[in-house]
View 1 (cartoon, one colour):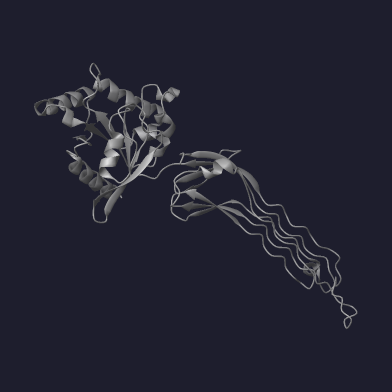
View 2 (view 1 turned 135 degrees about the horizontal axis):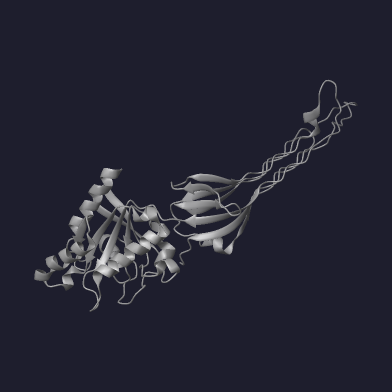
Length: 336
């Protein structure tokens, strides 16, 4: 299924039903009074967060969504039926914006949470409503009001505790496969990850967290180069970023410059995301000779002036993963 994380749709609430102009007419009641009923309320449009959805793709094909109109009132004081509400299912983590003003209307962070996005029109009054001691035969009924119509921009931001960040082919997808049941594509060429992937990492019974992988960031991403910047918004809700680095890249590759370029792209995208807690994870450590591992990592950290936690792992052989995962779980528990 294609991943869609942003759509524009139009929603229209139902019109309220008209009130009825009617008088009681029976053989035994020659002077029957007014008995016109009120109309029904127009149906409203709601968005509801559905935990079983992970994309907005359904809205790509159906762009307009209409709730039902309220029914008209009838004689014999019969009130018209209300119009049925329209409930649109969206993934948990969907942000809702007014398509014209850009104002944020809501943020559906929790399962089954609902947001009213278009209110149904008010009903019209039948002539019974206008009856009084001085006005016993009113010939007045009102029409129902139109419902709200709105353009909406829906933007999905994945809900993950931990986000994976790094250059293409740094092993982010392999890491996600190694620690969760997620099955992102893994291959020996850049940009194998085309869309964000989520995985649940179970550290111990009743202890788990959600990890997100996005396409790799390359230099110039803020100018539209590559894919990663497009999906960086999916890391905006994370509590911890893991900056994954291929510790054994192609020859003549300056790892310090690669790391700095990724950090710079992150800062250019969002100062808030740049200030998020970020750990450095040196991956593919199994490709280095044992005696060279410590020196290689220490030299990089010294050149970077890195003062945050750092780890050496191999997502392929799972070396160092246990320590990393337990430290992540401990950190998440301390900030909750």
